[in-house]
Every structure is written in structure tokens, then in C-alpha cells.
Length: 255
Image 1 (cartoon, rainbow, N blue to C red):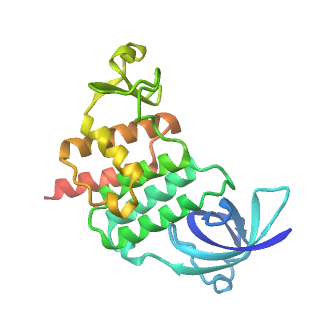
Image 2 (image 1 turned 180 degrees about the vertical axis):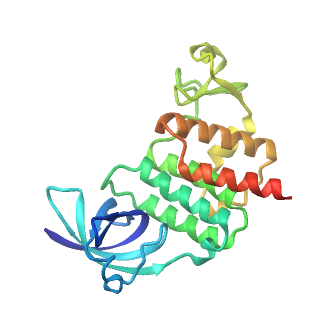
């Protein structure tokens, strides 16, 4: 076994036997890894972290050659993002971020750009009031950086540049031009402004993209397209997304 130190964002954790915990981390230097923290439930002071989801930690772990479960010997909290935890919608957004990382990123596939994106998103969530906008932009950036994104640059079938009306095909994973629209009768029309917004967000630094104004119609369509695409290709709706939807519905009903 080799020993390593790295920054790590907690994705989730669960109890293992009577005294230990297994946690999934997204790390700067090793991508997504799973780690066993022996004895942490019996001696919590042994580790300087409570392993809260989406907290930033520094971990030391022994990397096993023939297993994807590594032994974590030290876990020290660097940032708990307490500003996010004080707001239910922001905490829900943090849950969406970590759940998406867990669903989209392969095990031990290093991508420092995505690690930096997650860190920037969590920092912005602490100070920016619109958690829903941050979540939408995170989805677009994550899909672009992970290579999982829908095809919005041209027609997904013939690669023709789309000048006029286009349709979005969840099944085919991108835009269809008028000539190719018959290849998926379930494809739906999409506003040019929605496509332009996605391309702008993909190509801009995250903080710059936050200044992009969106009218409510485009925001609704963006959320529909992104969530439909993710639900279809992941084969499920994110649990954190359902929680946030329920919180929003409760908030509206209480007004």
C-alpha cells in the first residue's frame, strides 16, 4: 500500500459494522474514491472531522492496489461551508452537487477542473442568494467538463450548423435540425435563447456566467432540458432534486 495526502470533498457516508464508517470522497488528486475510517464511531476524536456531506477536508489514506476501498488514517476539516447549512434550499443544492458528482464521475478518474468547479460552486452558494441558478449552471458546467454533455453546437445527426428552428432529442442527446427532426418524433422544440444560454455558460468562467440574466421562460426550459437529460441517461431522478422540489412546493404553499 502507498500513502497519500489530498484535499477531499465528502460525497456521502454510511456506517460499516459497529465502529467504522465508509465515505465516498471527491478528491483533487485522485478523483472519486471510497475510504474506510476504522473506529471513528467508537472514537470520534480520532479524526478531526465529522464527515459532513459537501464539506472540504484534507485526508491521508493508504491506497490499496487490488481494491477500490482504501484505508483513511486521517481526515481533517478545512471548510464546513456553514453558510450553506443555515439555509434549507442551499443545503439541498449542496446535496444535488455531491449526488451528481457521485452519479456522473467514474471511480478514481482524476479531473482537477471538476474538483475546482465543485469548490467554487460551494463557495458561491455560501454568499449568493439564488441557489437554483447556481445549481442550473453547475449542471451545465459539469456535463461539459465530464464529456457527458448534450450536443448543442450543431445537429447531433448530420453535424449541420443550425440557423433556424431546432428540436432537442433526449434519446439522441442533442439538437436536431429541421431536416433530421423526423428521426425522433418525441424531440421537442427549444428556444434559441435557451441554446445560446447553455453555450455561453459552457464557455465562460463560473463566476462570470452567474451574471447572465435569464428570463423565467428560458430558466424553466433550461431546467426541463437538463433534468430530463440527466434523468433519462442516469435512469433515475436525483433524490436531492426531489427534496429541493418538495421544499420549494412547501415554501410556495406557506405564502
